[in-house]
Length: 353
Image 1 (tube, rainbow, N blue to C red):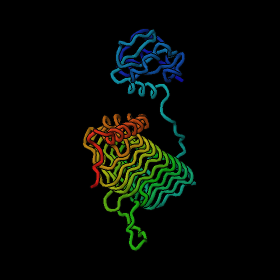
Image 2: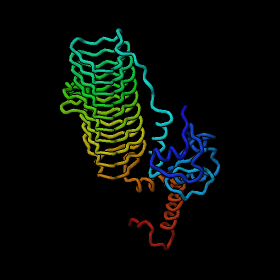
Image 3: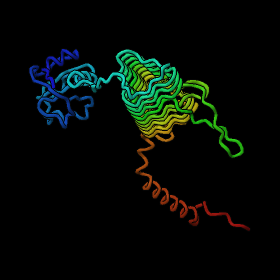
Image 4: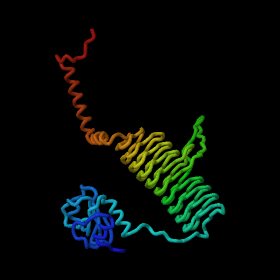
């Protein structure tokens, strides 16, 4: 594993060093687990006290006012600098070059671009096109007339249904499905009749799809995952939904059909979003929220049903006190009842004469 001095790393990320610039860095770790030769990072000031006890050889920070003997790399965006250093020291996963396996089933009417690596038991159907530099792992199915762009990585057992369009530099992790039929049925006399789903799925450039995701094709309009968006594992996207550019959807999010998300939205784990609503730009939705209504730009919401974060904090903060409040209310009601029936209170029940 290559090593770099802290000074070299600072130059690489456009930062500056506070302390010994000659210290050698070989790897990266969290503040609590770092040891000699490791670099760590601090992005949340509530962990500042760990700077005094960390065994890291250096720490990336956003300002140079922290009191610590550990050498610091001061960067404008510490977490982004950490990412750059991780890539420099460790790199991304290396993919074995296998060429085109003779065990792959590639239609005579399909086209596979230059410098692709297509593993065993891949199926590329009639009319499908795969761009240059793609890596397609065993068990992948690419349906008829689908389009896969350049430099994509498709991990084992991914299924891409017919007609779908995958952009450039897209990563689809294992066992995800793109373009399955939407959950659309017309119920008549107690029987659920399947509605044909004639839309497709469009995944734009630089999207990453987690493992075991399901992205439904549209009933009439297309389902779109916007440029640069990232989906965690077990995310379900309903038919005709449109995810804007550079959104982050954490694991187990479920979005019903025909919903629209703007750009740069963050959706926490296990969030459920109903169909046919609009969510604005730069919206943050807390984990396990249930979203039932439109959300305007820039809002932060959580809870079920999802409400403004400030209101939700106050409401959920009261939950732990509800038993005591209930008892207090009962006691007050008992006192009121006693007072109202006391002679001379003026609150006695009227007599019937």
